[in-house]
Image (cartoon, rainbow, N blue to C red; front, side, top):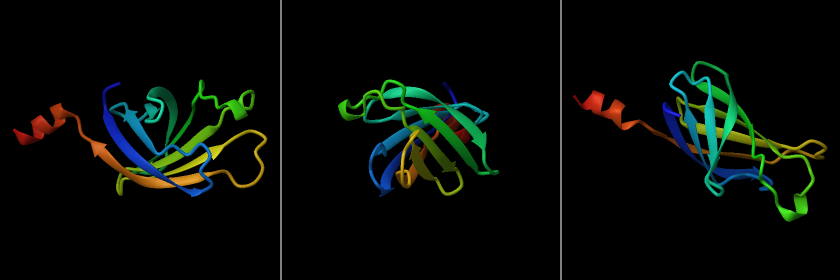
Length: 124
C-alpha cells in the first residue's frame, strides 16, 4: 500500500491489557484507507478510516488471529485510535464486547516516514 507511513510508540494510560507498544500505520495517498501493524506481531491488518478533522483521522481495527491462552474464545478486542497529523500524536482505546469498567487507553508520539520519491522530488 503506497502512501503515508507513520510509526507510533504507545504508552498505557489506564490498564495495559492489549495496548501495543509500537504500531505502524500505512495510509493510502488520499488517507481513505490504512493498514495497521502491531510491531510485536508484524501482521498488517486493514483499518477503517474516518476523517475526524482537517488534521486528524479516526481508525478502527481488530487483530483477527490474536489469541492469548487465557482469552481464547472471547470476542476479539476492537482498537480505536485517533491520529493527529499536525502534532503527530495518537490516542488509543481498546474495547471488547462484554467488558466491564473503563477500557484500556494509551497515547503516544508518532513519526511521519516520508516516502523516498517525495523526498527526492523536494530535494531537486
